[in-house]
Length: 442
Image 1 (cartoon, rainbow, N blue to C red):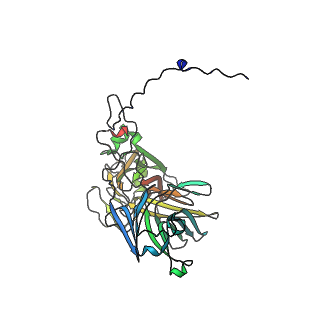
Image 2: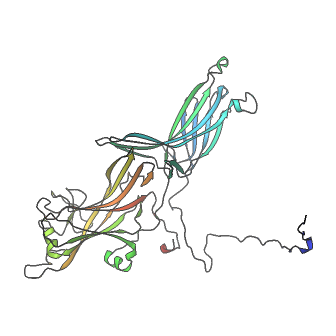
Image 3: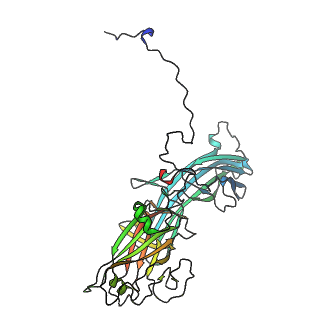
């Protein structure tokens, strides 16, 4: 048998000790450029208070909670840590901590369904498994467990949904609830002679699961839309829809343009600017607004009118809103080949017209030409909205910017009501700039 020759030590290459690894810093050096960065919010801070719940002879203490919180809260892949304080611990034979979460859905067309999100169990103490026989249970037990980031359903993996509750009891009904709970199960012996029949007590601690997500780009300030859309058209997303007319009606076309910031991912606290433009034959535009005052536009509801000045006080009006822009949320559920959805309004917009108006653009002696009429506005989610859009299992929560244009005389007007919806995503945190770094570099 032939053997490969083994090289001698003298034939091996010489090696010198490696140089120490370079030091690293967050500060940019000469010639370096920041490609991507996810900054921490300036206002965010790590909570340091304790959440305390006492149930009989057991006290549950959870770390890292907001001061004065009535319910503990955790974020994505968070660590749940705390202590159990047990009175008369010598009678305890087992202590188990369970983390449970479920997504419950009910709809009148398909019945109900419950999806298990988390079902983890941790034995904190067990007399039967003690290394020393009959080792007593300590009166204080620390614990640390970690929440998973995802769950599996029907062969797909989804991020854990935030704590959420939707209750539409009117037919067709739709109920959605994602809930998270800590279960502390304590087994005690009733009597020394009855150790085989321990008494079990369960303590429930509901908690809020609130994963944070940040917008990936800023909403750039634009004092003048017309200059902004010319110099930075990439900063705006445009939706164009023609106004439909009644059958057998011959009218010049009118187009509705809705512009929103291009990212279409906005923080719940963001004020979202937008621009509305109606373009077409000026005479057709005047016919559309016949019977309405063009120096103002009704907004928010049928009783509120926003006059031409942005800061003017709303006045009363009995007409139907001409323009209504709002944040719209659609919650849809599917089960057993049935689908159901409900729409709700998260926030109403404020609008104001941009001059000039159409009152003197066209006369009977001049030929009608192409023109446009414009409005600007802002919309923001209501303060009680704390959850952004998500998809989990058979539930899909989607958000939109919705525009509804209703002619002043909807029963007589040749034009029909128009609705434009632009899909967006609402997230918990706004985009954050880093001091000394340009927005375009993030």
